[in-house]
Length: 138
Image (cartoon, rainbow, N blue to C red; front, top):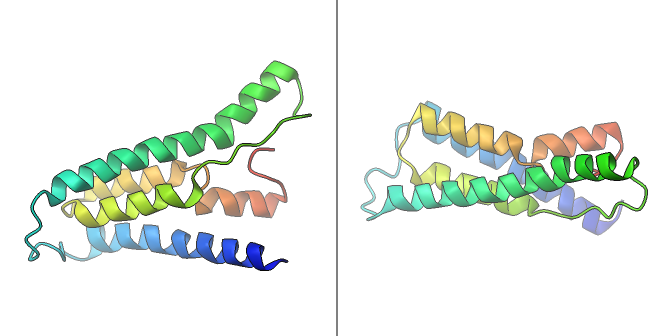
């Protein structure tokens, strides 16, 4: 295993623990810890980050699952398929920032957690691909 593989694995594991942890802590277990901090437009910024994460995670989901399925359907096999990379860390980062900025709400927590799960290059799918022994696109 190369040094780059180890760094990538550490980044994915850190993201995989941090993002769901922030969502659960902020929206389910603890009160709004940033309520005392007078940040004007905190909720609006949280909504913007949630929308950005929706775009990035949707794009990652398309590239990881829909695009290979369409290619296989059109060509009959995955021969000569050039896997495209999404934005693996960015979607989780946007979700974590949105989770911190949005007011504590179980509904927001569930929606952000579901968004994290559908992120095609998020930790659940990377671990799934590793255990199956193949690339996400294949």
